[in-house]
Length: 543
Ligand code: VG1
Ligand code: CO
Figure 1 (tube, rainbow, N blue to C red):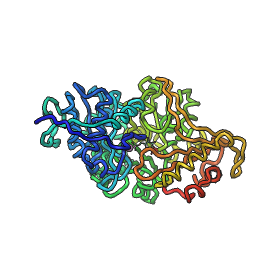
Figure 2: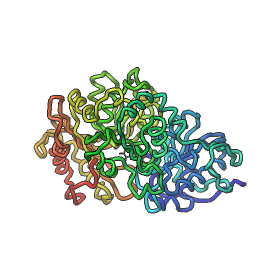
Figure 3: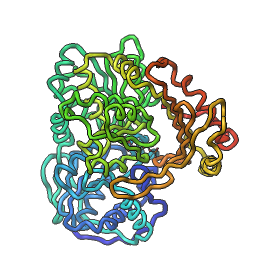
Figure 4: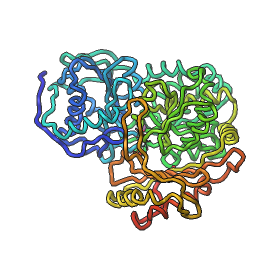
């Protein structure tokens, strides 16, 4: 075994986006591409000498090969220890937990999350720091700078490491700990939730379907729901992770999780349904004939978290990403909790969580989490819902009705326009940006615009500022629209339009979401000149 220095790089475009570097799988498979990004990351953190890392991925195509490469590079760069999931599998929240529990210097997550997998689909890599959370912007920025100047990488010339057995194995001077992906995560969940009570709920005949979408949560959900909590076999479907997610799109929303949705809307629906994404950090919650929009789910969790043992002392506060609806703000206001609005992406919650300013965080994109790790956590959200259902003994639909009657309802939907030509998407955003200051006071599509700006975030903990985090338009009567371009896509641009209309507790809460949002949608289409600039007004996906 020898350490080799290979001349390679730089590669263009290795700029981490909302959640790490995501590209077509074939791009990652180009000789030296992954290697240069990993070396740039190690260079950006001041080298790997004596350091320890966690490595795991969601099992998609190229996961195994990528893990072998990173292990050999870590060894060649002088790392002392790497913790890796058996078979190379770890969910994103499990990586976060292991970094924290085993006090490693950081970790690598191999995933493109909710993007499809396969040789002609997507792959991704993300670096997390010692608090268990995604690298903050100053680090992703220096990683990007390193990718632009890199000229060689170091790798151990060694045979592949067998990751199939739990235990410890050396690679040169580095120690590799191969761990069960589920055990430590399950132990953490047991400290937060009343497993006996949830078990009793299932014993009492409560029924559930969890769609793992052929992705990484399969083994976790099976062990926790069907194992520790005693739910009947078959509660978890699509439970075996596959390299291409069964040919599907592991995105837990009503469009891509349509098999689960169809069952939940049918006459034979179980009491509760949930799904998670490729890497296990997102969640979809759906009751019998009652889809819960992620922003509402966050609000319900904030209002009810004290019912679970891990949160019985109450919450320090709540943070949501800017495009997430204000439903959680309404709860925070009434409960007197700290309330923060951050840019899209979990990396912005890290400082608030570390400083103890917030306990729960959430994003409209089906991400919810707490201070138990520094990532969003799909199964955690499902277990918190189960704990609440076990305490309240009401249906999901009843809980939602009560919630809206108490706090009002934030009708909400996100409209995605996918694979828009980059120039067209930029033209639309530029055009809107240029008119922002003229908009307040105008009436468009029958509603008056009261504010319009581009969101900048001032981190209250470290004072850093992040500009260009989305264009927002406020309307009279608590309606709002937000526009931004996705930072996780791999093809063209994805335009995200977030629509929201608040109605107070005494108002009608049973409108179809599209109907409630019609006015604000029409206003956005008009004000952005959408038809003229991108050639369409119908989105590809509504969540
Ligand atoms: C999307 C979501 C964002 C989420 C990010 C990563 O980003 O909107 O809320 O944090 O994906 O989630 P963007 O830039 O495409 O809008 V995951 O589960 O893909 O790690
Ligand atoms: Co994800």
